[in-house]
Every structure is written in C-alpha cells, then in structure tokens.
Length: 388
Ligand SMILES: C[S@@+](CC[C@H](N)C(=O)[O-])C[C@H]1O[C@@H](n2cnc3c(N)ncnc32)[C@H](O)[C@@H]1O
Image 1 (tube, rainbow, N blue to C red):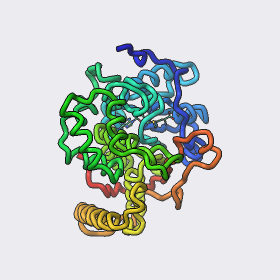
Image 2: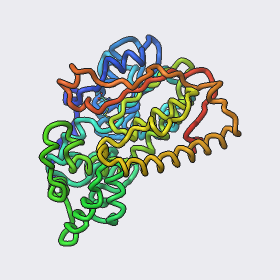
Image 3: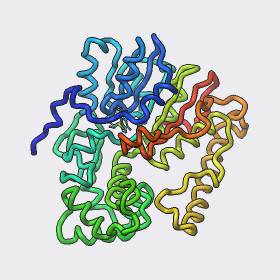
C-alpha cells in the first residue's frame, strides 16, 4: 500500500477551521499567556492563536500525522520556542502536561477543544474514515494507518474488528447510540449476514452493505449527509466507539478544572448532540446552574418523528442524570457548594453556531456548536466524578 501520509508538511493543511473568529473572541489570547489546543489537527486554531499575540501554545493530538505536522510548524521562525507539540489523548491531558512537559497544574490561561475528525483524516482513504472513498476499515485516530504499529500510542481494535467480530446486538447498540440511526437493527442484520460469506474488508464494501439495507428515501434528498445517509451515521458511530470519543471528552472536561488558571478560558466546539449535551451539562453544573431538565435535553436529531421512542429514551436519560446527580452529591458530601462557589462562569448564554457566511463556504460547520466559560478561582467541582 502506498503511504503518502508519512510525509507531511505544514503546507498540506486541508482543514478549514470551524468558527475561528468566535473561538478567538472567547479565548481572548493575551501576550505572555499559555494556551492548550487539545485538538491540533491541521493547526488552524493554534496558528491563529500564536499569530494573534506573543503567547505560547501546547498543541495536543493523538494522531501521529498531526503531531509530525505540529513539529514541523514548531520549527518555523515565527513559532520557535512558542509551540509545544504533544502526542497523546486529551482525556489524559493532565498526565501529558506533567509527564511530557514537566509542568504542574494549573498552567493554562485558556484551553480549546475542537472535537471530532479533521478533513485531513477524512480525506485520506487509507485511514478508513470515509464512506465515500475506498480504503481499509481502520478509523483509529491514533495510528497512521492499519498497517502501522506505533510504539507510543495505545493499541486498539480497528473498524475491521468491530464490523467482522462484534455481535449483532453490539453493532445495533453502537449504531443506534452513536449514530442515532433508528434502522440500527436492520443495518446490524445486513452487516452480520454479509460477513457470513466473506469478511467485510473495505470502507466501500461496508458503505454499500449499509446503503443497500436502508436505501435513501426520496423525501430526504438534499441537506446534511448525517441526516440523509445511513452510511455516514454508521461510520460516525463506529469511529466514536473505536476512539472512545465520549469518554475522552468527559475525562478532558474534568481535567480543565485543574489545569486552567483563575480567569482562564475554556472553549469547546462539538459536532454531535451527545457531546454538546455533555459539555452543556458539565458547564451548567460547574457554574452553579441547575442540572438539565428533561425538556432541555437535545433530542436525537434523527428521531424527531418517533415521539414514543423519544419519551422512553428521555426516561432513560433522566435516570442517567439522577445517577450522575447522586454521584455528585455523594462526592461533595451532600452539600450544594456548586451553586455557591462555581468553578466556571458561562461566557455564552446560548450555544454559538456558525453564521450563514461560514455555512456557505464550509458545510462541515453546519452541526458545530460552541460553548465557552471562564474559570473562577474556586475549587474544582468535578461533576463527572474524580479523575482516576
Ligand atoms: C476537528 S480536528 C481539529 C482541527 C483544528 N482545530 C484545526 O483548526 O486544524 C480534531 C483533531 O482532534 C484530534 N483528536 C480527536 N480526539 C482526540 C483525543 N481524544 N485526544 C487527542 N486528539 C484528539 C483528531 O486526531 C483531530 O486531529
């Protein structure tokens, strides 16, 4: 297999940063300050932060290709001594900072997260993220490709293993939970039936199986890929599962309370309703706002027509929130300190979304949601429990 991804240069950058002006507006970079870009990707945010004033940036990415790219950028004259690339997962950002930089918390004046995949990852068929281009079923963000063994990144299953070895029920659960596809059982059936004759080896083979199981209804033509295309949703679901994306975010949010200096700013851009809900919940609890009411919860955008199902899933979510609340009250000894001594102050009352101009030039920004907050000087609240 040819592997053009091994050689990178800063000029190869293909990712158009989402809501960049808004990110800078909320982060407010200051001369002499130190920021953490927890999702370096193609470096769009990092370069903009560094270009805005004489500050420093710690740039984290779990993708070795992004890390290599960051190292090249760090050698450029204008960024020398100001950009610190770190290879690793943002869910362990506290450990990365301690072990790789030898810094102690709190150490950041601002942290920014741009959750998800970069265009560079999607557009490289060898990474296996795209249902539109043929490639191996990989989808690991923390490896260069399925044929690589990286000594310094975690070993994990690939999409090949998920698709060919997971049970029908496991597949249906993943596709429903992370892809929001109400036809998840039908898709899981189609995958299990197809693999009885021979293993499913490529992205296009998987996409064809899913699309054949759920042909695109005529009413759904046009609009967002995620809304109209079952293959897009199935690929997203498998990617989220393989890269443990929700758990990574949950753990990273908890780390921000320890790593941000008083007055430090947190900016998070998400592309999935489950992620946005997690960020909203975290910031609301840390800022002393009530936990989300059942009616506030983002409903699964793909399930709008299924009211009955929605009601039962709300009941499940409500139960989950009650469990979270219980855990919180338990860890804080039953007092409601979060309301009196909030660790964050919200910077935007309503979620920020891309404006029409950006939507026009970057369709990827359609589902992006930005939330921002300022760290107070109060003790961490850790609404998701303590870091282990
Ligand atoms: C949407 S891109 C970021 C794009 C970047 N803001 C830019 O302007 O170029 C997301 C990046 O985050 C990385 N990423 C995703 N999950 C991660 C995790 N848990 N730890 C570290 N990096 C992660 C991906 O590898 C990808 O490069």
